[in-house]
Image (cartoon, rainbow, N blue to C red):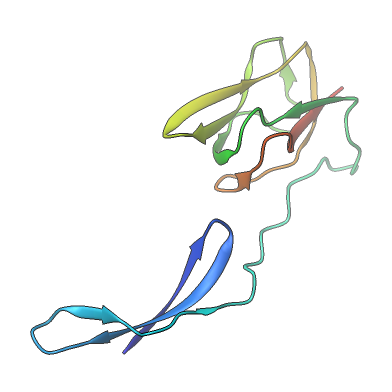
Length: 121
């Protein structure tokens, strides 16, 4: 028997798999819901301050990469974050010129539409 923790849409499940004769595997009759997976804390500006301009997720998805860092100067249209949604990579860009005040997500994090990804000053 092998035990695994599988996360589906942010919900963790403990699953036990039993090996049977012939080398194939079969899932145990029931999977029990595990305690919610703990997410890594979001990175914030060193001062803990948020900027005055929010950059929000336009759709639900997964953060593939963070292209800017706190204190980085950006121009309108510069790529800040790459968001994967519906198997496509979407560039999340700066809405105006400014300085990155905070990055509120980590690579690999799942986000919903409207979640704040970063802030600018």
